[in-house]
Image (cartoon, rainbow, N blue to C red; front, side, top):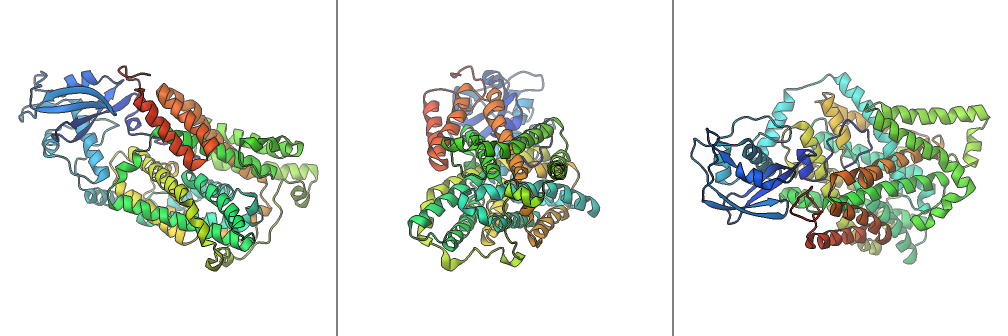
Length: 597
C-alpha cells in the first residue's frame, strides 16, 4: 500500500502474497489432493511451474527422485497445472533449494495463521540446510506464542539512548501532525462541519495520540507507529455526510443533534471495527482478511487519492464538492487563485519526497510552505486579517479549553434511529481496514526479516480502535512507513512512541485556535501530495506490475467507486473480478503463458 507519511526507501510495499517474494517471483501453491502434504508456497520465477515440479527433490548426487506416492496438485495461485507424484524420501535425500524455500515459506504461513504444519512438512523441515534468501523466513516453529516470546527476548537485549528516542519522536511528530489535521478535514468534509473544524481536528489529533499510546504499549514491536489511517477515511467521511442528511430528513436539523449523532456515531463504528478485528485475531482468521482481491483494493486506494485531492481543492476554494459533476465550482476565477498555491505546493512536495529519499524532506517542505506564505504577506503588506477576508485562512473560531474537546459528544442528543443505516458501510470498512492492516503487517515483516504473528498484530489494531472509539476517536492502524523508518534508525525503545503521543496531546492543549494562523493551502498541499502519490502508484505505476486483466479490474473499480459510492463500488469491483476470472483471464498472477493475458 502507498503511504504518505514519509516514504523511506522502498517502504516494504506489498499488495499481495506474491509481491512478498519480489518483483520477479510469485508463489506456487502445492496443495494435497487428498489431505497429504497440506499447503506449500513454493517460489517460482516467471510462472515456470513445470521446471519447479521437476526439481522438487534431489539426492546427494543431484539426481531427481520422483516416485509415485502422493497425488499433489500444483497450482499457480488458483490456476491448476495438473498433478505430479513424489514421495517423502529417506534421510539421505536433500531437498533442493526450491523446496527448502517452499518449506520455509509454508512455515511462515502457519506462523501468521497460528496453525500447525502437517507431520510430513515437519519431517522435511528437519532436513533443511541453511540457505540465504531475502524472501524467505527460516524460523520453523509453528507456535504463535513462541514468535512473541522470541521477539520480546530479542528486543529486550537491544536498546537505544533516550535522547535518540526523543529525537526521532519529534521527527515523526513533525510529519504525522500535519497529516492528522488534514485527515480531520477529510472526515468532516461536508460543508456543515466547516465552522466546527477547530474542535473536530482536535478530536482527530487526540485520536492519533490514543492510537500511538496503544500501539506503543500493546504491539510486539517497540518501534511501532500507529495513527489514524487513510484506509478508513472515505468510509468515515461518507458516514458523516450521510448522517447529516439523515438527521435533517428525520426532523433534527439543529446543529447539536447533527454534531452529537455524527461524532458519537463515528466513534461507535470505530469501536465496532476494533471489536471485529479482535475477533478476527482471536479466531485466527487473519488469512481470510486477505481474500479481497488486491486489484480491487488497488482501485480503492487510487480512489482514496482522488478523494484526498478533491477534498484539498474544496478546502482551499471554500466550496462544497462531492463528485466530478461539481468540479465546475473550481473553475471560478476566485477559486482558481485560491487553489493554485496548494496545487503547486502539493506537486513540489510530491516530487521532492520522490526524488530525495530522506526523512527530513517532508517536514522541511511543510515548514517551507509556511515560511513562503508569511514572507509573501510581509512583502505585499497584507495583514493576517486581510488574508482571512480574502479566503487564504479560515474564519477564526474561538478556541475552547482542552476539556471541551468532547462537547459535541452528547448522548442525549444522538438521533439513534439513523445509525443502523450505516451497516453496509461499516461492513465494507471492516473488510478494507482488516486487509490494509494485514498488508501493513506484511510490509513490516519483510523489513524485519522474520515472521510476525498476524493474529496478535490484528488484535493490537483492534484494541487500539476500541480505545480510540471509546474516547471519541477514529479508525487507525500501523503506519508502516514510519514504523520501518524507526526500525532502520535503530529505535528499540517504546519511549519514541510515547513522545509522539505526548506531542499530539500538547497540540490538543494549545489554548488558541491553530487554524487561525495556518493557510488553507497548507493542508491543501498535503492532500494534493497524497492524491498524486496514491493515484500515480495505483493507476500508472501498477500497470507494469500486474496482468492486463488485473489492470482492467483496478481501473474499473476506481471508476465504479466514482459512480456507485464506496460500499457498492467495492462490491461491484469484486463482482467484476469474479466475472473476469470465470472467463479464464489471469486476474492475480503475473505472466502465466497458460492463461489469457
